[in-house]
Image 1 (cartoon, helix red, strand yellow):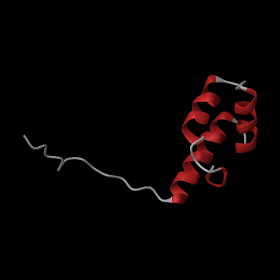
Image 2 (tube, one colour):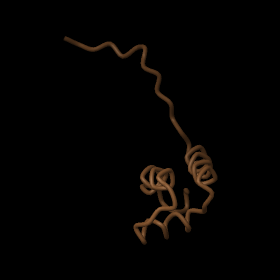
Image 3 (cartoon, helix red, strand yellow):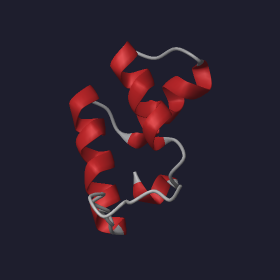
Length: 65
């Protein structure tokens, strides 16, 4: 049986879109990429939200965060 995916919308994000989204998440937790990275290295995040943001954006190169 074949699946019909005609109703699936695909969204393509640019590098700028990714950078903007990452910056928005950093702004939400009130820290910079470097501060969040330091929290991760220490294994002590200032909040659960900061940890969640790290889990999302840590896969990106620091230049894109």
